[in-house]
Length: 515
Image (tube, rainbow, N blue to C red; front, side, top):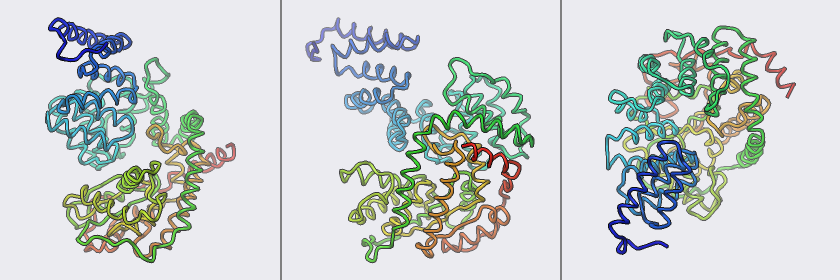
């Protein structure tokens, strides 16, 4: 039977504290069942014991049971809203429940209470990487790397951020330093996958293929993605060595178990894509649009394309525009759709096109407020979430000052590069089946043609091959499209990946026929 705080004796206070210490020690020793039982007994006696709530939540986190951990942490935050550790653990849970924006809010609250806490900064850096805020993520990780690397994977997270930002020399420096430290098998697999992404002119003094050989064969305790990471990295290395048949066989073997694992999800994804495609093809501009609030707002520049179609290179070009600060916001449209659908009592929607048209005034107001909040003083906010391709019509109806750049690339080359990529769990489920990939590409091409026809001067298409051939002219075209002065030619060349599928065409076709 629970007791009120006023009726608790000094002896019981001491007993409860001893039990809590025992639970922490059991958890540290790996005895999660024992730790959980102690905490549950404590909470039976003292439901408002914040320490027991947090320790019990941590045992669930360590087991990957994030749904069970969350209500415990919420209860602990209600009891002590200024406990930085509880806020950090809540951020960790939200991140693992695919809610990175929620995670960032709680992590920032935690840092306001304890600004230099390394464990919080690590989680915040990871959350920012998830939403592709690589510049800010690198700043967070840089704050702690020189002082205390801590988490073994963290230097490689920083390396990955630098790779996205084309800071290749910095990435190489961090990579080489981190590789000299003790690393477990999973982190090594991640590190070697990053090594395969460096441009060929950046020397790492590392034979990736030989290094991968030391990790061959599954071992107990492997993370689920470790063997897949090793296989895809091996395929990339063999391709660089022009061992095309070996590379292809490796990629087919790497994709096979994932194709089986994601078969049902891929089928559902395809059905949903067909429904969204139909909505887009039947869209026509509103004759009377919602009244737009007065006042200057940043340009929402949507850069949309398939994975491996040159999006990173395009974002690099956009950074060279003479317009002041540019903010890269990964999923502005998607977040707006989620917020409005939930606020209006609807099932959660991830696409604006699924919301009733009578909500257009609400969409317009909400999008503008979210845009201004995330933009700060930026002149342009770029949005790169691929799902936004389905929302172009509704955005033109509702959003102020919006434009679209659609990226295109040779179908076979996009398909080959997608097939050679390992994606985060439960994302791009179509990517491990070549026929599903080509169907996805076909739908994407249909959508781009649809929007180019219907959106007029608010949309352009950029061909990857043309951008590689002449980045300066491409940048001038983008500047004109955005109403800006033509900038000088960019001071870098874009990595030329044209023709990558040529040695593999016969095997691609054979695999499609087999499927």
